[in-house]
Length: 214
Image 1 (spheres, one colour):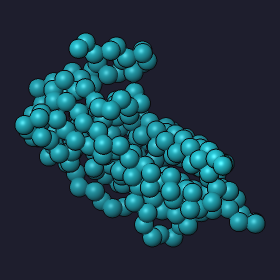
Image 2 (image 1 turned 90 degrees about the vertical axis):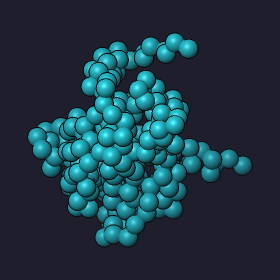
Image 3 (image 1 turned 30 degrees about the horizontal axis):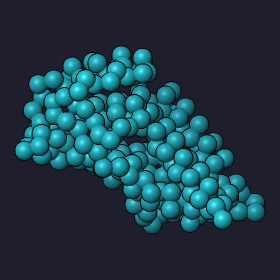
Image 4 (image 1 turned 180 degrees about the vertical axis):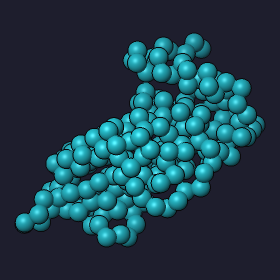
């Protein structure tokens, strides 16, 4: 069956060189560097990302199920860029990425505004449910809520959030592991953070709609 052409021209133009960079790379080597398991018999990589079980064909690079186009592109870039550097388990802001002061810093500020606006007065249990629905692990921290999302095996994104009270508005930030630049570029990191926020806000909207059903 002929593959359907991407509708987004920008995505299509970025996807083509991404596929070219992956051409000829050994599957087992990519599995070792990315942490994504490879099934030699079926010739597929198996990935859990943002609450979805995903399969990637080697070497046709078709991705199942159908994902947001930028999510697809991030997967291809991660497969290409990952060098196997271990997680540091130390958090940093997006603006702390190498050469990330402008793009990453801008995302930090915008995401803080969006999180405060969208989550500040949402019940904590509902936010926790939305995070779990995207496959996040909830862990103890100095924040009211700390959720670690598995975008890729070696690329967690951590959300820390403090809910509003009578005097203080809600506030939160997204963080990366300090090893993040070994797996995605600054531009991809910002895309990844935006993708996560969009998914989280959609999940919260769906939960709110369900709660209003009689």
